Image (cartoon, rainbow, N blue to C red; front, side):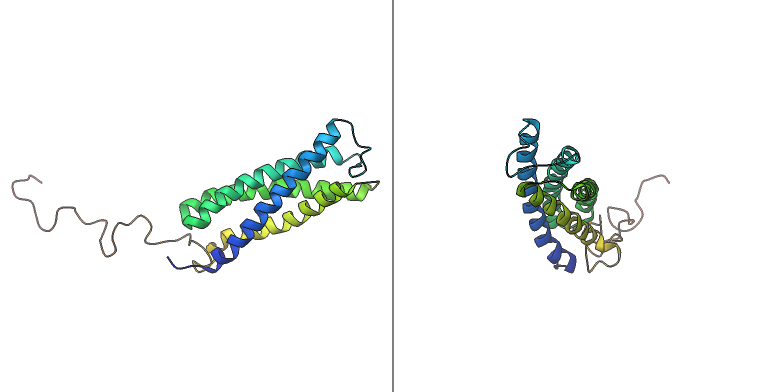
Length: 182
């Protein structure tokens, strides 16, 4: 199968997003652990009123994002319509949760106050991921416009056995059967 433009661009973006989502899971887990233990006085943590909500959605976005990248890797490998459905739906859910975390990151930045470097790094990664995940999602669905960009939504050869075989033709060859009642 020939390589397509969407596949060549989506594969590195998938890998980049996977690494970034793993970093988000690591930082959000550390920060949430400190927040639950009441150690907000830690020099690299800080926080404000939106921190608990932001950390919850950042951790959720990270876990869902990592899971969607595994499904997306399967789709990049197969690059067919049936794998596109799973990759597209999980990527859409991951982007939606990341967009929620993006909104909470903006709210946390807007409230202000002291936020340690780990929270600021986590905010930056979530903000970047909101845009790169949207770009990845658009690349997955680029086949809607042309099969050059992805698995076409209107494949005519999908489900047909061999090329040149009419699927409506009777199996068994040519003419009428002898001894049969019609």
